[in-house]
Length: 155
Image 1 (cartoon, one colour):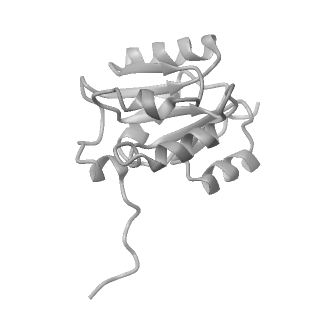
Image 2: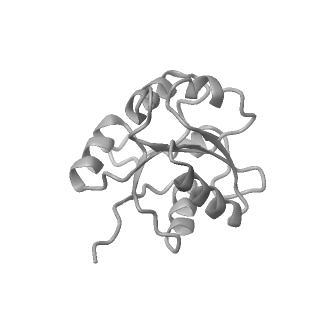
């Protein structure tokens, strides 16, 4: 007997990887703003996570394919040459990369943008400015297979 109440699939488990953070965990950050990348890289580094950097969605699949391991992609939406939506579509067409979670990261943090990212096929959404106090927990949750769709708190 089958049920229609099956839980959503976890891309990390489907890819045969153990959820969570290990010494080999690798995150690809696709971000054109150096200051934003440095912040993300430092936060990931404090968590013991190795990160790689690409400044554009252009050729991101070719670059990602060179990485021996890839657990997560943090994708800025507004990028030069090819935006995050175009890059995500290409990644989803790659047999090797199609199950890697891709999280939209954008300064255009609104409910409308979050809905657009969800409809496009992103696995989550983090609005900028990123909160250094919340970021480690957000990444842990994402790497454990929990969907994270968050915009910054308004003051």
